Length: 157
Image 1: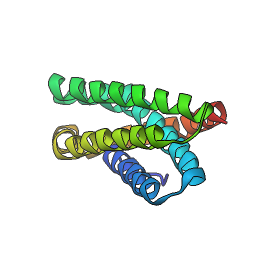
Image 2: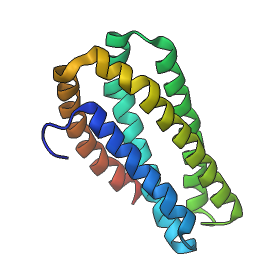
Image 3: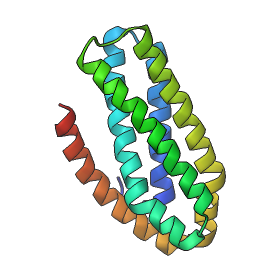
Image 4: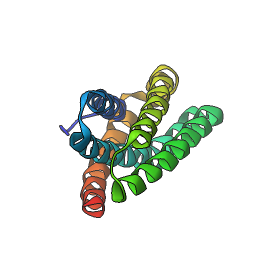
């Protein structure tokens, strides 16, 4: 992550990365699907932690939109449940038709969440939080992301 990345740019970059992984999964074969699924889960888990630990609390404090924040947190909960099930499937049988279907359900849920965040939450954040606050948040998020990537990559290995 380059220095000076603001929080919104970082979140949108993460969104684009997982959307690319979703598209890659659709074209992949069995072995590649496992790798893509693992990478997707890692990216989503790190991203969700960044939002829940850093971005959402500041958004709630500054923008004071409890409903949009609560909905985003609930969407994270649904995604986490599906990701936990996918991780169990990866450890046991690997990929089958239910694995692929479950991954696609995850993808659809996350795409919906991304669309809502980018159309509702992020524009409100940009308007109310200001460039300086978003830059500070971005810096915190970059540092935390590096830490989480190391920790969670090791845990998934």
